Length: 260
Image 1 (cartoon, rainbow, N blue to C red):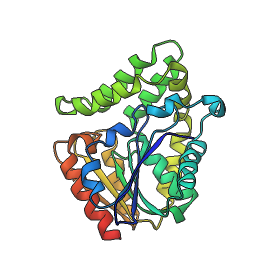
Image 2 (tube, rainbow, N blue to C red):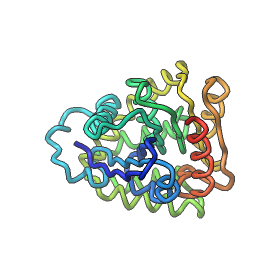
Image 3 (tube, rainbow, N blue to C red):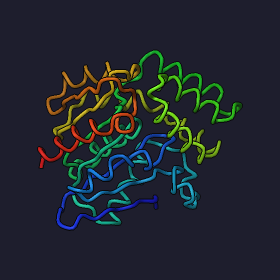
């Protein structure tokens, strides 16, 4: 089972489950812990091959990775700890997993907070996927990952989140990187399905105004989906919760408390 860590609130019965992105780990949520623990029970999860889940015996993960199977990993953790319907926060690729969990088992999800959400691949991101698929078996994965990180988070003020993801990605191995990268073939069909099918779960998108790859598609999806809203954080890139934690925490907490 995946590595997870819980923080129990002395009186609240509400839970917030945090899901990180590809190459990261639950460490990316360290700037949320203090504020969120004041109000909620917290669960952090390291996805397969990431963070402390990299130490888990991987024999059960020899099959080809799919979004459905990785989402079921998360559900297994929720079942094990008997987590009631909860609020889910995701960042980057973690937003796809959170949204997919809401699709598979909507009764588990009270609301979604999606930071740096990926809702469509534009020309630049499709080129990155092509580049990665072409060279993933011949170039050291950290070269590719570092290149992707610089393209997605190019500015000086993005350096903290960029370096955080690069350092966490070093815990992956080449084989694990290739497994995760193969998921890219499933992204477009899944995102197209999500775009066409609105869900009646309250969803907050928190996006940086400098998130050049993913902000515009989110603007469009919010216009089309009745239960979605968008907060744009100024002078901020892709990993909003790391670059502008005070703003992210303020928006996310107000949203979740409002849904309660």
